[in-house]
Length: 297
Ligand code: HSE
Image (cartoon, rainbow, N blue to C red; front, side):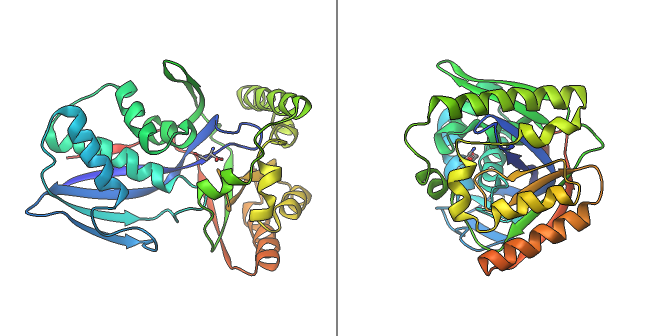
């Protein structure tokens, strides 16, 4: 059997909407081999993940077969889901990236990174989860007419990420539907300034700038209606010493970047989110991962 491990990712970091992504020390694991018929077995977080040919991994497998000129022979897929789906932690990107690498390993074929990204985009047209899941680390991405341009940076070792993951889903499509069709010039400038500041602060390890650098006026503020308690959670996290707090991807997970006091910060955010939403939440403290997808054949 071929084993593929694909990391979770957190994206946006407030101001860097659809641009920043970071690979995390938490992975979904996929096992695949050729078989008599298509079979899918999901373990871990199973809810809403099809155990048939509608499974995203199988759909991407078929697309990659087409790309490399192979007949999509039936496969057996075992999917170990350690990342809660539809929470803003890149769970679907793991299935897409896992299927691309898994298919290439099954047929012993190679394609360029550009081609991998192009296929991935057919299924998820935002680079911020896909790129760090492929290459690891902190990535700054830009979509252009000729494809995705990106730069990978090492995320500072000493920073930890506290995730408060509520027990309800927010599909990315819904989180995009609440966004306005047009953004005011002053709000655009606000985000451009802060996203540039965020990268500069990371590169110079000037962590005091992070709190201002993750502020946003183009997506997160509109998504607060989908994530009750977000505003208060951000405010209170700073009282406990968080460096920066923002919505992870399209939400509803909330992420704090911290140097210390992670448990305390996580528990405070959890309390606020649980009270405001009526749903329970779990806290996970993770480190950034400098590597992306791994294949073991
Ligand atoms: N950046 C996307 C969003 C999620 O916030 O809608 C990741 O693809």
